[in-house]
Image (cartoon, rainbow, N blue to C red; front, side):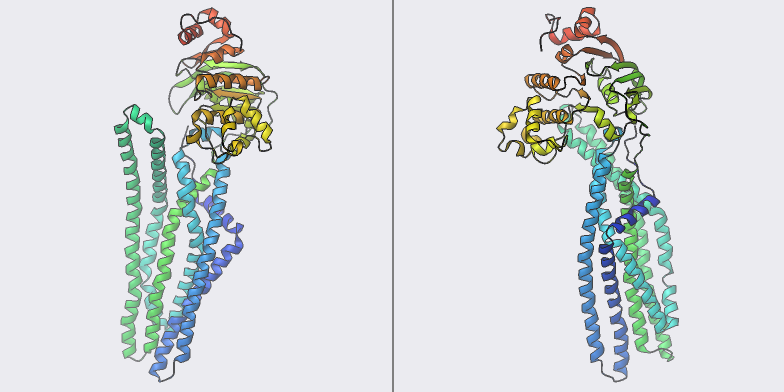
Length: 581
């Protein structure tokens, strides 16, 4: 399965950006208006300075003109300050909305996508990419539009002062257009590659942090270090590529920005000697053209930033359209789960499951056992709709399980593994995820059902802040099992769900959970064979195939694979009959 999340195309990014702007029209228009007024105020001083020079040359007073120039400068300062304030608030609202949308999309991802995606990629999209897009939407649109208007006003103003000087200055700006076209053709793919490299680095760091003890125990430090160096080298190469593009763009812009006022000064000097222009006109044109460099540079800075943030936005919006199979046209008819001639392989490897046939009766307690690597967990994921078979069919109520929408799937089948997550908040908050309407009495009953009586010893009981480090893996797993009790599905797939508990606690939790789930379908993928002893039927897997199916006592008496597993688990004097539970 492809572990890379999709990336939106340019059209999707443009639509998404417009949607975000439409959500906060007042904030966006206010930011735009204030920036436009600040830009207009900035045009006043150069024009007045030219008038002041001509007035002094003519011996006229300039007090009023100087006062107006100071007032315009103060107005520009105040307007710019409030524009920044309003823009920052607009940006924070945009980022809040993007993060909310991102969370909703992640929660709506198909189970198979969530199971196999790269967490580093998802983390980078939800942090670095979101922040970059928020800053860009806050500043880019007003800055580009205002700077474009300012540049247009300045060019028009130069032509109004003197057309010949205006044409000279405009001709000198041609180099900026050529450099910009060269840059924009190459920027988007380069920044997408940089974002992918950043995600890969985040994924690698997260994996090393989570598996630090395993890496040390297995002596994998050198191997992981070499892998980290390869990831870092990819990131360095990607960043050097974008740096090269900028190193070509910005010198071209700097040179092209300096040329117009220099050429106007040279030409203006010639025309001044001939009496064809006034000194004030030359100074005004030079100041306007010098000022023109600032909006042009702003536009190009944001165009460059838009390439980076556009790539980030494409990665965020890619979550809006994940690859998803068609959902079932009709809901399942009944609770019977069946697997027929199922084959499954990870990526392009060999089949992990090879022609598995299995029927799970409603209300049955079924244990799936077998040696390590037999395909037990893979079968559990297929029965729970996490993955889709390569060949064959897995159905619930005659409907393919993998075709069910996430909401439909949760109503029918819940998978509980030994890897559980404790969310930030109180114990109560973590339990209410399964049933937001549950009262405290139901929460305590669910905890009691899985043997989590330790909650009563907490300072604030259900109101205590939950922390995986403080509670420990066994208690975190018990909270996960309590959520299953509250969710109340008709089928529960337990993939070694009590493996993190000590044997005594695990046994008590399994007995309590079995009692609570009486009458419901329970498929337990077990590595402790007492779970199989208590089941209605035992499915024995070996090398991706179902090799034995039957009650515990019959399989022990048959002397096959299960009997060998049972004997090796309990020893040569293991009891061969089921003990009372």
